[in-house]
Length: 281
Figure (cartoon, helix red, strand yellow):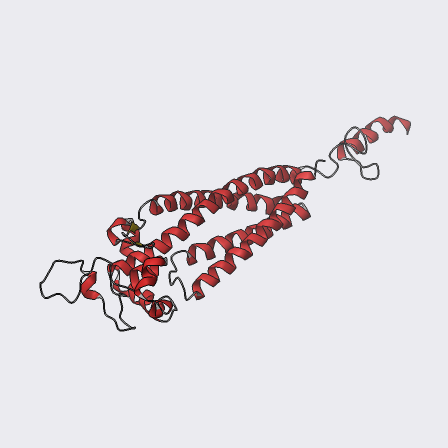
């Protein structure tokens, strides 16, 4: 029973090892995705996946081989992982609390406004160099391809993703073919029917990208809560395994009162035998 925590820790680290591989696979898939074109979460997922992978291997070695110093390193870095995850989760909930779409009368889909999102996110898409990368990805994706064959009736009956709503069409409020100049959303003048232009330079397109990020990040934050609770439980079991690894292998005194092997007595027992046996000579 004294080594039960080692067994449980080894089993749990197998689960974390598998989860780290899933995280790494998700991050690599996100980097190659041609549908979302957002890579905000790729680096955090890669770093998190690699950290959990290394810690899982260390935990397996420490628990299965009963190596105390490996378990100590494992627990030491586990604290940093837990604290970092808690900070990332809190930051994620703060950032994703802003934003969301606005309903359009007579339509199923929503439209998105750039000013409604968290300032930290807005600074990313406002940056020209970063937006060129996003725009290039959007141009090479199939985001707007399906909408090219839609009829006006389809826009009344079908839903749109945030990217399709913001990048593939002008705002619904736009009015064209009018002789009287009217004040409209600036995105109305950025729109062009050309397949390589559309509304890729619109603020609504930037908002669509941020909405996609917001939804993904919010889901990730919810998963992070579960991961943090799980890692805290693993940490507690790891502490028990570390205490077990520090105990001598003869714990429980299997060889007598002092827990010493008869074939290799301790120095104090050897000295006692010599002292009491000297009168015999």
